[in-house]
Length: 311
Image (spheres, rainbow, N blue to C red):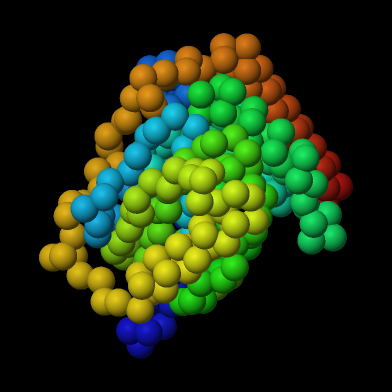
């Protein structure tokens, strides 16, 4: 009986979470206290954190770095990673994501439009246009944002071993002299799992930060050598994490998602034109939907009244 209750609870939690992650960005459009992109993103992720009721613990003495042009490499498990990993880097990074996410989480388009939380790229027949991909990475850096990528190239729920990393972002880091830091989080698989359609509350996630990897052009004389080095470091770091026991009492600290990092001292103000356009669109769609609903109700009542009069 307990298992059945838990199963129903987890299903209900997932539905609730899915509703909130789509509705909250729209609600935040009308929070007039928000002035900057990072505040908009922070409030969204904090709401997600409280809704899912999970905790994140830092398990390494190393903390997150906010060096200029840094690229964060994080492990991909479910769609909830976009929220969890954003908190892990204190909301200072922009994700690279396939356009698929725009269809699966439509509310995320509002978030992307206002806070630049995501940058979309195309993958056709399993392949990505490297030139277009690198142009997006450069555009992110040119606007003083850090980059978050999932170098595994796909969601790997339940896979407790490392795979070879995709080359695109590693090659780019070499060419642009951008440092890399790993932020691998264990235990986030079932916070909001779209494969199982469950959301399990009260979970603990454990984040491990690596050192910052700076390009050493004397040692690694080509992009391929740099890729082999980063790939090897990732595998060692990942496999060490996924073959050990994780205890809250071993943590250095509990990550506080209420903290708003200063984003390298450059809190970009929200683009007012985009904000007003989004508000007008939401209000217009709402008015249209309400008018259609009222018209439908009136039509139904009229039909019912006419039918009653015939009898």
